[in-house]
Length: 402
Image (cartoon, rainbow, N blue to C red; front, side):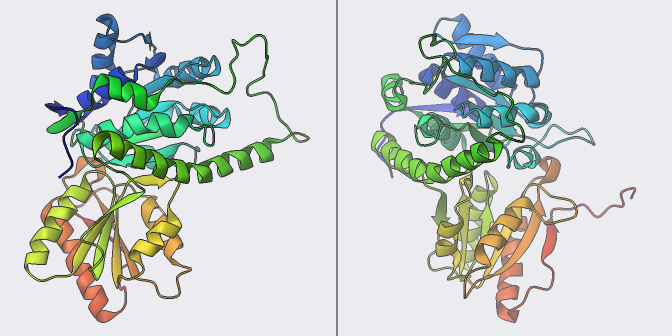
């Protein structure tokens, strides 16, 4: 067990993120409340009102305005943070690309929630997966502790001069955002020293060194080259993510990488999961190991940049892998499944891969669902072939109007 270096508290995931933001003390926060993210905006606004931070809090009329205000503040050279969910993230869509295209290291917590219709306020990953190509680094959190730890590390990752990209920290709506957990909060001074002072590369307020942000860059311009620069920055972020994770271990005793392997090295079959489903899967692994089944879990923490080579090294010894997707891409398979299968394709000897969609609209992911995925994998490994590459976990047996 890691040595305790901070204060142990019982708080929700949203409160843990708000505490992390208080300790980071950003220059500007612009946010619009949306369930299940609202607690973050409310609690941080209280910190501002009580004088616990120096932050300029901008209450806006929509998420589109929130991200626009973040971009403007970042252009001025401010350290900027925000938070959102679901339709709110979708409403930010076009500005997400502006933020990354201008290379502003804005930090945003996204409390994962499904997209309408039908109207639903509960968890799935449709929102963050829809933003996967916007050149934001995406980090996922199994618990409130991880959400807190990730938001602190995100500042260092995004602001690194080799990266200078925005970072999105995700956690499951209501499952983690509103559940009270044991969280270790680091000392305020430790977090302050860890994130350091923000030194922007450029600022619109630096009148001695004038610069232009986001000008027209048409047919004869360098749009293509700018996009390549973003791609290369995303690649360079891999080294930074690992370095920051190692340094965070020195601070907290908790080290983070691209993913976590749980009883994976001696497993024959395994599931890959994001966020809270990893915990349910680990619990199921423990139960099935007692029955003698060689099962394991790979919990993916970093989805963008996608750690394809590292995943191949971790998975190549397995006979079969199930990718759990809490989002779907109608007309294709789950978004995580497509990434994993493409990564494994070039292996000379690769595991069989199957996709399970689960938990849409907050449908509970239970141990029996994880067990069903593992039992399917054991059957696939025995037969040596996949007969049903896409399946669903936890569906009700009812007819819905087609």
